[in-house]
Amino acid sequence: MNFTRWSARLPGTQRRAAARADHPVPTTDRRSEGSVPAARAERLTGEPPPVPAVDELPVREVLDRVPALVALVHGPDHRLAYVNDAYAAAFGVRACGGPAADALPELRDLGLMPLLDQALRSGKPRTLKSRKAPDGRSYTFTCTPAAEDNGKGTVLIFATDVTDHAEAAERLRTSERRQRETAVTLQRSLLPQELEEPDDLRIAATYQPGGTEAAVGGDWYDVITLGGGRTALVIGDVMGRGVRAAAVMGQLRTAVRAYARLDLPPHEILQLLDGLATEIDANQIATCVYAIHDPNEGRLVYASAGHLPILVRDDTGTVLRADEPTGPPLGTGGWMHASGSIPLGPGSTAVLYTDGLVERRDEDLDEGIASLERALSGATGTPQVVCDRLVRSAGVTADHDDDVAVLVLQHPARTGPDGELFRNAALDLLGGVEAAPRARAFASGVLTSWRFPPDLHDLGVLAASELVANSLQHGIPPMRLRLRLRRTDRRLIIEVTDGDDHLPRRRRAEPGDESGRGIAIVATIASHWGSRRTPGGGKAVWCEFVLPKPAD
Image (cartoon, rainbow, N blue to C red):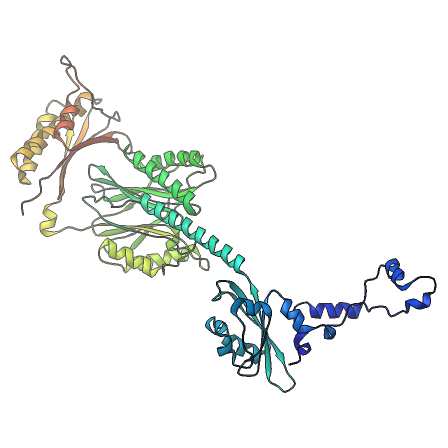
């Protein structure tokens, strides 16, 4: 085999040949210069000694000293013609003349044989990057075709050891994988492990982490029962990725639960969160929707901090979009948020979601929301079924490029025996000495019609009387009160609203005090109690009793 015919294809030889053509070696006879010896003349002129041509180099000796692995195969069946010393040191001595599939089994196992055929057919080099060989090292193989006069192809196999690069890349991938696993674990641990179950709503949620190494973000959701039959729902998205975003999300979610206990309007909750987000990290922002459902009102009152609109499908299948009002994200500061509302009556379904569900790189965001609206209009079944259908319709898979959080809530339309378990009764009172007896008589009649057991009947009447008396004693005349009794399948709720915005508090009455015992009595006999300010002024004070479970 004439190695000089393909040696010019080795990396760098063509460049060196071109350099010699541009700068020919001088051929002047130094001996004709007389007084200056040839060696001295070379030193004086600074010219290097002549470089031998590539054809004059001992090619086999050169290849044997190359640290890279070199093999040469010839003909359509790729018979082995040559391996250099580095190849023999890596895989052992190889006998020439046999087919490469038999003579070079390590290359066959690495899937290099088809690459030899491709190089011969195309006449162009083919490369197989970073493959781990049987010797435990990683190599990048390049197959370069070299045609012979008789038309039979010759292929030079050149393997570069890239073990250090491969190991560094694997360490980096392992580190990123562990970081992502840490972020996912932290993210899931900070989300609610079990959703609270309000009496009047049916709720389901899902969280799908992004499939890429850095796609785990700060999406979160939560359901918070406020008492008195009201429920707070929240969903948010912290900008950024990884453990930091998940940690900020955890702080915001904890803060939301704490602020929710104050029972403030949604826009005031967002004002508090905005200030907290700035304190946590001035460079970190988050979007959020905080909503409150009151079964007595049949509406969802909400405030949005730069988040995507809530979607509500009513009992006719029409989908409404809660676009306004929307303020800037949390952490920007200096903005007064506002609350809005959207109907959520019996038979309605609402969806809260993060941008990973509807945002695509090649699609406008409004198109993604419109697509979700169409999917929601045809999604029926339980909240979990609706949740799964929306995720599937959006094309969210395990390798999705962003994390996704979805919260679905339904206000069921109850009829028949189930409807008997959910009842309401209300009485408007004008403040005066006769208000308390009227409240007791009304509560007694309602609880009797609802067939409550005597002990629970008496406790309910006492609580209604004390709440009305408390409003009459501490309110400013003229007093207009509303007494509302509500029963669900789990509890009895008694609520009194008036026009005074002074919130009561439980205190210890001294033996000689004429007041201060009403709220203490209510707090003692009821399972829970609380108070809140109402929109437009005034307050609502409520208490609830857990109903006994029916006998099997």
